[in-house]
Length: 631
Image: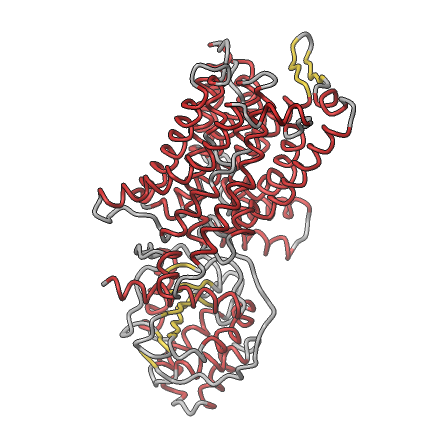
């Protein structure tokens, strides 16, 4: 059912209230980008430490630390504990992100994985080729693995600095390419840079990892049960001679990601209600467990380790590895060394040529059926900023090189950071000076986006407000008793001053926490049978604390409705069926909480204050215009 009733609202009405919602990738992007500044500070600190001290930098990081159980134990120096111990948690987060993108992100359409996978692989092969070409026959040739892997955290952070207003699709493309990059790099470490591999510890590691998979299938959710198994996987992998960071990636890939189901949330609400009625320690524990179990293993692990990995572990890795003593003699030799030159050119030239080139080739060979999810300027900028290697590259450099080649490789990696950043800044500086229509296509591209909303908006069935021909449609799943929906309502009112926006309301009454929400939804449907849906919608949001049956009948009278008919209609089956249809739609669209917004069929993640939603609507409108021209 459609209603073009104008929404009167004070255009000055705003809200400063924002709320974060779960997202497959955006939280990861903001965490990784924000940690780049901390990592750069750690790199600078390491360089200062290594050059102003009298050898204390190296002596500190070579301090031996042992953990022993009887006669057996693990003996590593501090740098090895960071590189092989703490960095396992970083690669756990990388694995979690890869799995989440496959389960919830754009890669749930497996065809969209083809291009970034190829770009990631070729984006490693070409830099390796450049490095080997420059170092052929030399002592540095064995360190080819140090010239291939992008540092996701540092690249994202610098992309945010040098490529302002870069669309999120460009960052998503970079992350996807980098995930492939990291997976292949760890395979390279396991196969080419592991010595004296011992079969028995490796079999123990594989068996322990297989046990984790069985536990996942059996529905075991307690992290404390998994912890000793994970430690066995790590320790056995270390003893096998393979760098144990591989175990972190494998465990992350095994952790499934999914949005909380309404049944799980209902159970969590019931447990909390029991605690509210009888606040005992036992019921508090059950309530806490119920809340945690409603989240996927992937989400729980990501929320636990993502910030720690990005803001503590990776900067600590930079502090432990980036310190090289630089003097005139070293610079004179290193700047002409094939190792330094090979690493620098592999990243600054090889990465962008490979990623952009393979993207163009696949697009051409597939007739455009397989193409990047961002515009070509974004793809080129992604390729240039991918020319920043640090984390994995330093790991491999430490495994492959001895001095002086080790310091030369590190210098090449450090020089590539400003080099790649400068080239990326140039790409987006030129792009920003294109005419607006060409700039939009260059940044956003014209690929069709995946649709999250199921089913699509139907004006004959849905409650629609605003012009039928609007280029942007905003859908809200809401609950009349939900206080967050009430706070979002002024935001929607201000957005509706846009004459190229239509707004759709779908019911999602959360009856476990809002006992009057279902009755209020039925009241709105009954009012709709007398062509007063939106008037009742507005009135109930104005009086959210008064939604009892007597209140609803009063509102019907206030709107001039036939109150007897209104009461009878409210109790009819077809009213309830209409709400049930919206609930089924919410389940199909992965919605479990309110308010949840969709913009042109794509789920909106993040804050939903006025400015954030206006920007999302603006981008959706630009994409709609690009799509209209394409068709």
